[in-house]
Length: 223
Image (cartoon, rainbow, N blue to C red; front, side):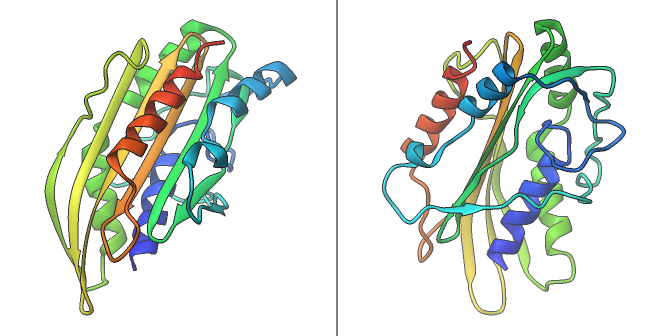
């Protein structure tokens, strides 16, 4: 059940307009991709070597047809033009998950506009909504321990984030963890990072690793 929750949350956010979902929708940006910006977008995202030691495994993106959580409006980016994009390689490790993606736009003005439209929604509220939506009918009980933005010193000119700490009580066990979402923009590029960490007996992601990954993604927005 834990894996189902994490997958649902990732897909919900990708469907909410981070420019990395695979399925083409009327609200998606126009695609005028070129080789240089494709390479730049691919370099921004998290790669396997960034994660350090451990049994990190590739996860395929399955965002097709997944709707945004209730109350989280999917922004219309159809008047904007992407020149580069990088869909996730996503990575999992015994209950924990790291997803990332990036997009490059034809101009800095368009990238800022895309950022502002996506950032207009409350990420922690959307994560909580996605949790409730994913658990509906399962019989599990969700408790939100805390939620709010993540402090990060000047990671990029444009930055928003959200983190939810939670516990889910089911028939067999209670699991605790955190979900963190980072969204950055600099110049013509935007990027997102999603980190899901489930506590023991699963293998949680240390806060130090999460912080390093967020700083790494933000730093790669420089062209």
